[in-house]
Image 1: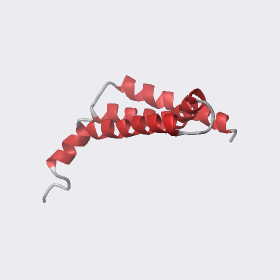
Image 2 (image 1 turned 45 degrees about the vertical axis):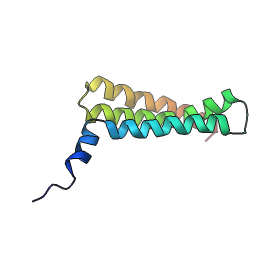
Image 3 (image 1 turned 90 degrees about the horizontal axis):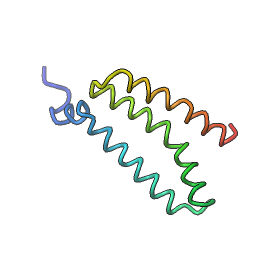
Length: 95
């Protein structure tokens, strides 16, 4: 039975490079929205975007740590860090 995915796609994910690309897109999105946005000050936009994008970035870092077989401590660290960031974002939005 042939492999489901080509070898380069498998290597892209197992090396963590796919996650690095996605994190780079998130960082670019953060910078663009910080400097192009028109609501509030730059600091306000940075905090708002950081709290909105931070939990997802932490989950992606946990996935990357898991895919690259990093220590379980890193996986748990990033998963744990995502929760308070998410709760702070919810509190900021008053949900």
